[in-house]
Image (cartoon, one colour):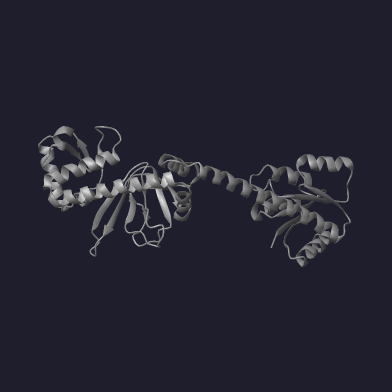
Length: 351
């Protein structure tokens, strides 16, 4: 039901007009003067406002002036009703932005005609805006040719979400309705065993996609995603990304290559976890985190020992003993939870 705000100081006119509108299946909010009318308009955001001109507290012109300056109310159709109608009155109202005038006394057909025409105009303008936005968006989608274009599409059209360190972005087993792109920050994805121990499956940094599951089957997220540091993320509905890929084959091929590289990296990490020494696993894990988290060479990384140990595939206690050895050898420095690489070449040569 459409909502109408009726601002009228004459009790008889207000009650009778409200009754007529309610019988016509409108929801009616009434106000006995302009000051109350302004407050009611801001509170209820009606579909249309009908307002008397000559009122105590604040006249109709004042009401229109105030509401036309408010972002939430300036587009609401505004109809004046008044016994005082002259060419100058009409011109003044129209200059302020009024949509129509009705002269008292008026019959119900005149009132309904004015209301329906204004509501129809709003509906047409709204449809045009939606169609224009849809056309613009479709044009942008049709112009996507590379993975970088797809990332720019995320940045330009998708809402951004912020996460603090430790905040969960999605849970393992949750509905995989969205695909994510990191605008800034770092995200870890991990699986938990029956004892609640985390096994980190991947680290994602700025400009990385994550959260991609099957486009043809309703497969839930296979891992949990959590922000490691202050992170900004762009989230696109999976069905929308599917439509983009169906219409842009080059982007699809590049995304497949991107995902294939990720699978290759995971396989290499698994082989390393299976066959490398504890020292080699620890060194490579520190290097991997440094690459993902620290954009400035020589900058410390701030990460939990358990997360590092999880990536390395070794017990936390063993990991801590190994990095303590690295510190004694002058390869790294430890400051609380911070790790700073002092000798990058030596760390890369650890066996």
